[in-house]
Image 1: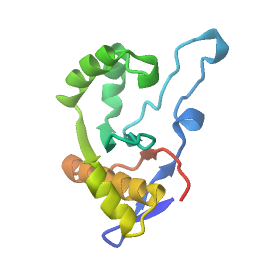
Image 2: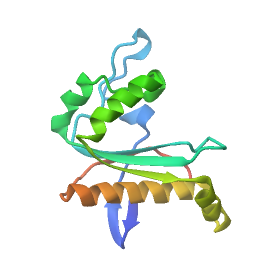
Image 3: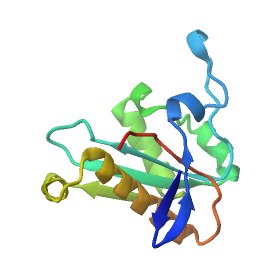
Length: 152
């Protein structure tokens, strides 16, 4: 999928994390998944199904040299982690990796909706901005960008 960014096409890998990001799936035996061990920018959101909370989008640059370090932290799907585990790992990650966190509060979400944007449009704009922010911070070519697939 190509996304326009300041009139320059930006190549984004259309990957749904559950289907493509794991290199192998542990399946029912509960073996550990191995995730995408190449330099890339990953992006995801939380809060899109929440009525009261903000919509948060984060993009992060992972250098292939950071893969073993991240694995040693036991980074995994946050749905499988306790809130305390998420907080502890986040504290370590945020001081080492390049990232962009965007938080869209309810009033700004409502303004965008009134302007004619649906949830998919809003998420696409936030994903694009977060990935662009990380690309600017990294200041080098990053060929691979991994984002969730969502329907417009």
